[in-house]
Amino acid sequence: MAPAPNPIALITGASAGIGAAFARLLAERGHECALAARRAEQLTTLADAIAAAGHKRPHVIALDLARHDGPSRLAGELTARGLEPAIVVNNAGFGLRGPAADLDRAEQLAMIDLNVRALTALSLTFVDSLKRHGGGLINVASLSGFFPGPGMAVYFAGKAFVRSFSEAIAHELARQGVRVTCICPGPVPTEFQARAGLHERTPPFLGRSAEQIAREGYDAFMRGQRALVPGIPNKIAGALPRFMPRALVLQTVAAFVKRAGPPTA
Image (cartoon, rainbow, N blue to C red; front, side, top):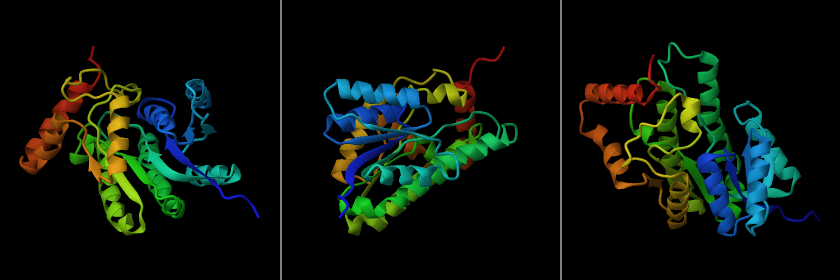
């Protein structure tokens, strides 16, 4: 008889930022981890650093989850290694700044593939193993998921999907012993900003470090909390659209995204 698969915490987008912070935190908390992202060198460096800190060295799986076969390839790789997730941290994603009609269409569709389709696939693929181990999902959305996003329309819409989807499956899976926590952080200084075409003009009272987000998100997950907006200023910001005229919300977000872009010549 084949040995039972080894339960692990799977972190996507683990090569930097919030994903790397989750990898370090989960290893510190005693979880055996599997790190997935496109960049093998960064993943290997992170895995070596975690091992050097005295924790079990994470498994490294380099692949592109934006590809349509990405989630199934990841699942197959875990099976081949005798691993199955007890926790899945769906963190992989990227953003693009600019009018949707002007941005490259293929890149925007790739953003949907990664931020929405891959997250959905991985959330549903491992439900049975999450049930077996009494674990669950940590889905990383964004404060932007509370707003329409002129200037980053596809990104904001994708994060709204992640919020709605995560809360719905949290309700559906609760009776099966599977926890689902959706984290909606405000601005976090990571590589995301450079990829999205943003620069550092974040109001300091909104910002939080990747390490803070990982710690607060993990603690919320362990409490069985369905959704988390880290920080009181961000909680207030996320509630504002319910009390503002929609036209004013659109104007405010459009101005904020424009200011967050690089200075024009």
